Length: 375
Image (cartoon, rainbow, N blue to C red; front, side, top):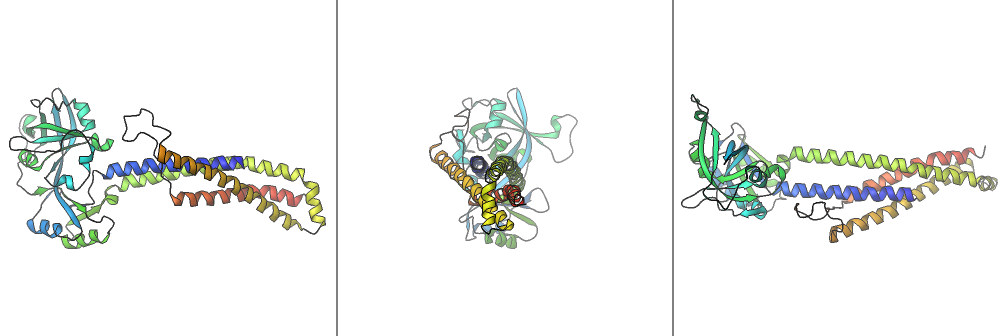
């Protein structure tokens, strides 16, 4: 029973902690993304017409709409340089996501009458050594030309300068990748006409209303792709689910190993009670009845031990959730200070099923031995 309790407790604690990290990663990743993203089904970029803008903007479930132009660039700051993804955004951009909540330095002003400002991911800012207090030092941006190149390396790139105005930290993947700039800067850098975009980002009033995506798809037609957060992060979700499944099966395997203690305990019990088993047989119990008796006895013992462990594991998870007793190493360098936990009812159901199956399988051998002891 103690072995089953340890196994069940470990299962719920580890799975709940895994769920906590998965939920945290998902929330951070999705904070950089809108509820819906519209992109061209044919080309990398497209021209957003006033008709499309008005049609989408006036939808009853659309709260905010933002134009975005995303492109790979090469950036240089002082004597350091790096490849990055530049995201040109308009004035409505910070209404479609929660990036403003993750600013760690500077502000979200992208342009004023005299200057354009860049908001840089923390990873990029650290690698480039960006100093926001030095307004005279600018980021040099190089973007590949779309037409024929020149004779020198610089002739193959469009080149411009922008002042660093802020630093954000959302998720490591984004912090090491993105630099946000005003759309006007992108248009100037790439010599594009206005309203050229790579995507249209949408904030919904009610994100749980699934029909909105289908309605917008119908309005725009086949030339456009409309994706929600789940579709944008399909690879991330699949990897997370695979990791969780692997973790679950490893823990179940550990529980099966622990059940050998359970098998040994029941076998020893049968050896000690051979005389009593024979007495039960003389009183009228058949060999199949003895088998059923030990199967029920074994399952009840296993389930009772598992339920005790499950209860203790749940108490530990609840205490950790509300009080954060166990802190993460390197406190102060993460967005959270303690190990996150998230309890799912589906995990509890799976654990109970596994407990029953393991208890039943562990009881089969001792029950057969009890049956055979009658001769």
